[in-house]
Amino acid sequence: MKYLAPLHRKINKLKLQTNMVRIKPFKGIRPPKELASEVASRPYDVLNSVEAKAEAGERSLLHIIKPEIDFDPIADEHSQEAYEKAMENFRIWKEKGWLAQDDEEYYYIYAQTMNGRTQYGIAMCCHYEDYLSGAIKKHELTRVDKEEDRMIHVRNQKANIEPVFFAYPDDAEIDAIITKWVAEHEADYDFVAEDGFGHHMWVIRSKETNDRITELFKGIPALYVADGHHRTAAAARVGQECASKNPNHTGDEEYCFFLAVTFPASHLRIIDYNRVVKDLNGLSKEEFLKAIEENFVVEKKGAEIYTPNALHNFAMYIDGEWYSMTAKQGTYDDNDPIGVLDVSVLSNLVLDKVLGIADLRTSKRIDFVGGIRGLGELQKRVDSGEMKVAFALYPVSMQQLFDIADTGNIMPPKTTWFEPKLRSGVVIHSFDE
Image (cartoon, rainbow, N blue to C red):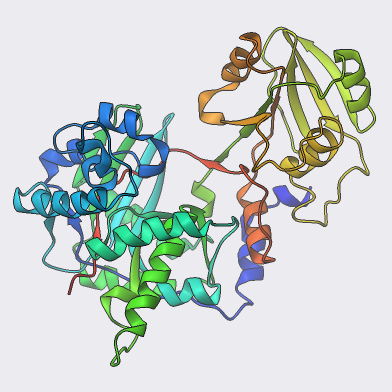
């Protein structure tokens, strides 16, 4: 199947395009080695305020990225007092030495280990014009209100406190540089977070190596937003805003750049993003199964958890039993980058056609469960009576993400889940010149 083809086919295709990306090293603001694990935190958008307040230690970056937790009771995260508290905390963290800025501009290798597997990326600064031109490609829609919230933080702090998560087409020389540096140098940070994932960072203290990385990325035709679409859009809008206010703008100013950790595509794995539904739209179980069999080959698997094993194969859990569902030939179009997605197949042929859920963004009858929680979570939510039926999907591939972004399409809601998440506070970019 074409979506399982090696990524080098996509890379060769992309190199025919004219867009090139512009990156640079930067003077990172980061914690001293002995405090790295205390300062670094989970991203702002994976915790609610109550969870963040419970999790935040004294030095945690959560006090800066979710400042509402410093109030009792917890403040409105969009209030002026919360935004001002974020600025105050950022200043205090620097004054106390919990965060300090490097004297020189560097790239930073940031690696993450999950289930014995390590992926290596580079913390870098990317140019806002590349986002506007499409050299930085997106695959999700963003909401203006969420963009503006992040813009306030970036504008107030004159810094990108949290990185965005990008992917790039593999490059053998960039891989070799990272491999060599890691082999020859001790990590500046090396810790395991409370979720069991390892985080490691090396500062590339070599101008020659940094210059070569900058040069090599001039040959990378595009970067892809993997996670952090709102932060990317907000950072680009702040850069554009700063440029409009500077009559002597050249395009080289620090405000033109924002923080990203960028990984070679072959290092990344997208985790499944599953669905649970509260009812059968008035159908009996037998009527529901009969309706599904119109477009799927349905096989009962029993009480043991069944995991989808290929594209267009789904797992379904209902009334204490697991089923395999395989979409029949002709129910999807391999040449349609959106229609071929399993989230589209399930939405069109089951959620909409059978269960009457047309809008995933607004329906109160459906919920979404990240694959990091395991398929046992789906079973638990159905067995509890909270939900009636659950569907597990085969994960989207990086190839599919590239295809969608390259054709200017947008993925349906809740399609991709990347894990592990980047730790916020490992390194920060400031444009407070």
